[in-house]
Length: 148
Image 1 (tube, rainbow, N blue to C red):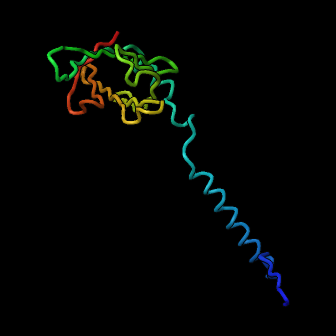
Image 2 (cartoon, one colour; image 1 turned 90 degrees about the vertical axis):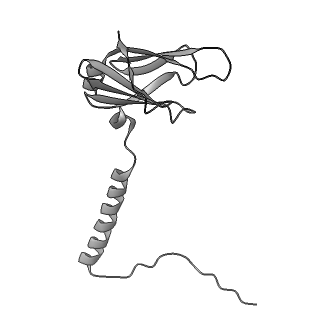
Image 3 (cartoon, one colour; image 1 turned 90 degrees about the horizontal axis):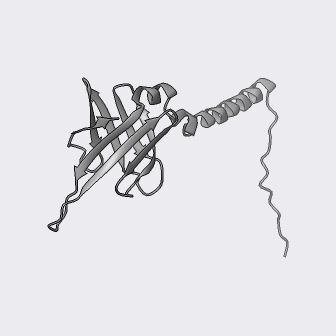
């Protein structure tokens, strides 16, 4: 019984040099465009030092916890913004740690930088001489925060 061996190699047909060069340059152009479409680097997502300086300080607030028993409890948070780092600390370990900051001089958004709390955020807005806070637990409720 005879058998045939087929090759999957691509055949290159002889064409005019100008056409071949055009095809190659188009392919290279597409490859370069695909490189630029990739996700922005961490450096591009990092806030500018000016934004950190604009918002530098510690912002504190407390919120009464909703409970089903007769006890009362309060969760308090300190949002610390310094030259190269944004952290959230509190009397609870829930999603405390490092945050990423985006925004401008009038409004910033802080998103949790770790795993497990992707939907955890804070929004700080300036309104006159006050700083207002919106958080992920009550996005429609505005709280005034103290700046230390």
